[in-house]
Image (cartoon, rainbow, N blue to C red; front, side):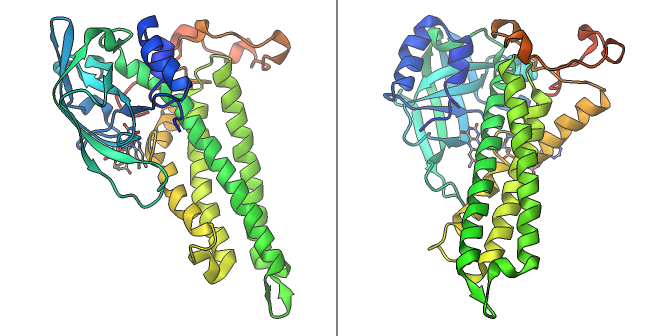
Length: 339
Ligand SMILES: Cc1cc2nc3c(=O)[nH]c(=O)nc-3n(C[C@H](O)[C@H](O)[C@H](O)COP(=O)(O)OP(=O)(O)OC[C@H]3O[C@@H](n4cnc5c(N)ncnc54)[C@H](O)[C@@H]3O)c2cc1C
């Protein structure tokens, strides 16, 4: 299973050759790609990453380490964030497609996790790995922009997964409460529990609507940096609370592995960390509010490459007086953080 994490960058900016060698086989299910950004000493702060790629003729020579890489242990290739200009901060980041079977690539450690037990997560080490220059995605030094653009869909996917898990938690909890009795009455007769579920159900509908809204904006090429951040923040935080409250409604059985609630609690914990933490999401939203932006755009933009929806589906615009000229509006991701 791959969420598009390692292939979206190839789809958007890769050469035809890269698409033929990696994208098409991935879509056909023959290859599995990973995304290697996080390092042992650099997570939210992407500009601080230290894996370097030095140009040597028609190849790059890669040295460094990545951690928390999903599907690294069983994958075939990794879309790797490297510094091609170590002095340039985020502007020195490039993306290379690296075969995980290439000489010098090693799974340094398989990581044990609190949840997400069905996904494999590992640390990767790169020692003098020769990567063909043809495996560079897009332009050298544009990696940060590509990452920030692609991460919007990943955040939205996290939000959608969180919404789905909330719905299943509520559904299972309600079913359990209908058949479980205490003091001669089904658990559904206790308002202390059902009102809790009612609150969660209301919040779930709000989160679901925001996810659809962000998806719609992203589809029209609006970038939707702020809305994707809001949707991820709201839905993943809600998933944690929902799993926890639902477990409480189960009583002791919620704590047992024979019911799914224990797993939901564990798995929901990852949602507020992956693809940018909740703190980073809040920072993004706050910065866009302070800047007075109506709708921050992804820095890599590329909106013109996407097909607009038919006119009747365009949203109503605020009055012209309230809108700032496009050139004055910020990108919404100025710092080299995972935001
Ligand atoms: C299950 C799982 C799967 C993952 N899969 C991948 C993957 O496939 N590829 C990949 O590259 N990465 C992956 N990651 C890594 C993930 O993207 C990072 O964990 C995340 O970006 C946070 O980085 P960090 O863990 O280094 O935390 P840090 O950046 O060290 O942050 C630690 C704490 O400080 C807070 N913090 C940091 N900066 C600020 C700030 N400016 N203001 C306020 N608070 C701040 C953070 O929010 C957090 O609470 C995965 C992580 C997990 C848990």
